Length: 178
Image (cartoon, rainbow, N blue to C red; front, side, top):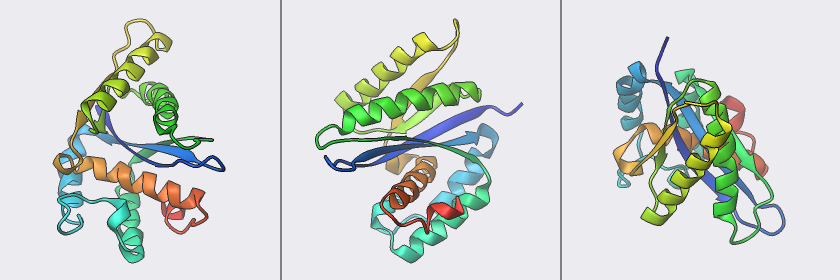
């Protein structure tokens, strides 16, 4: 049986009338990590050091979505709504709770999330710790934060989250291919 790890990134829109939070996780077998990292490094945006949805053109977005879809790996997405202005972290926490439960059910024991600040990363850790109370006794589940530029596998979930956000904002062109 393949050892699975998940790589998560988010996209959000804070708005008192229709805000939402998207937390996407790419569930990847450890034995494919090197291959998938190499593929992602081959398509990263120039001058950013990493691939990031928000800096891609429409054509580039279509191309990277197709490439991610061709990987044929599992992607889980938690969408929280509504997310009013200044409530992004609450939306992220609720999405993280749901994602942890679903990832654990798939046998994932490590979630790698894009690092933000020390304080916000600690908040994610506390959220995961609270989720353990809902997991079976003795269950193992950890979260680790890394810089987005240092882990190309995070770019996969960035693409998925960006495509889902685009769909929620009325542009289904990208997410239809995932």
